[in-house]
Length: 171
Image 1: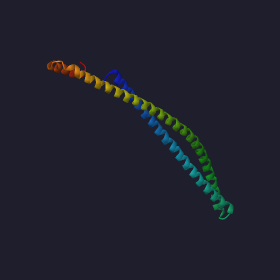
Image 2: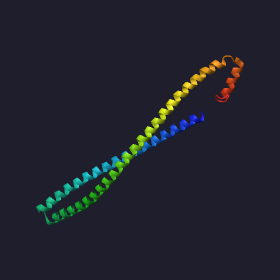
Image 3: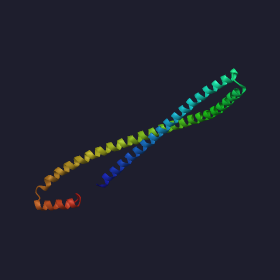
Image 4: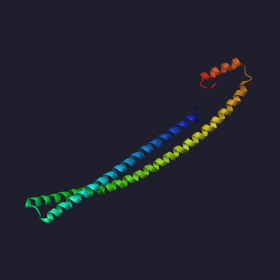
């Protein structure tokens, strides 16, 4: 392969590698975004559950039904659920911020993927165009060669072909 062919092959491989890398990066960003969204949804559901339990215990506490010891347990449970709610509120806020960061990162990686794929498509199109052009030139030159070798003696031509084959087409 000549220098031009090696340059094309190297350039095409580089574009393919860049596109694969961008695709992997984008898939990783999509997964991270979805995981964060899922975690946020889980935390919000847990918060609703805690609020429901807290309301139930507050109702039991305000109703005054039960012994003094049970009422004290209800109050402790309400306090514990309040602390747990505060922790969940902080976690939800953190997840919301993280979700926004990851959404932006996903958008940026998508743009990078689109750019890499566009560059690869451009390189592949140019490669195919040059390949067709070169194939046409090879066909034309091969036909011209066939015409030019007709007057050459068969033993001399056979020897030339042997040398050409041993030199990998150059001779």
